[in-house]
Image 1: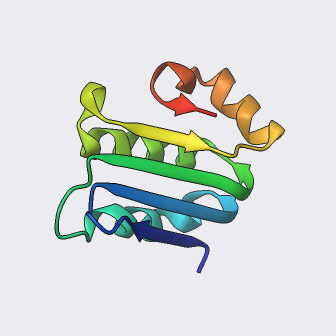
Image 2: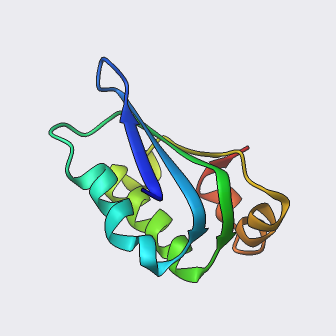
Length: 101
């Protein structure tokens, strides 16, 4: 699978990892990673270590995750961004909405 998710033992933290292109083709897999949980986690980590590309639909998916997780009150970190992915997030000012490392 190109989108994998792991929930912590206590259910408080969800980690979603993306492999390959993060685009509309991953839309359903990405949504399923957090919407199908029985309880909503307190924090979410989106690991882009193996993401090779990110487009506008991926930005939209991150915004949908943010809304689902509580909007301004959400605790979402985007980690392990490549230089190209990081540039896309910076140009889109996503560093104001997410903790990006």
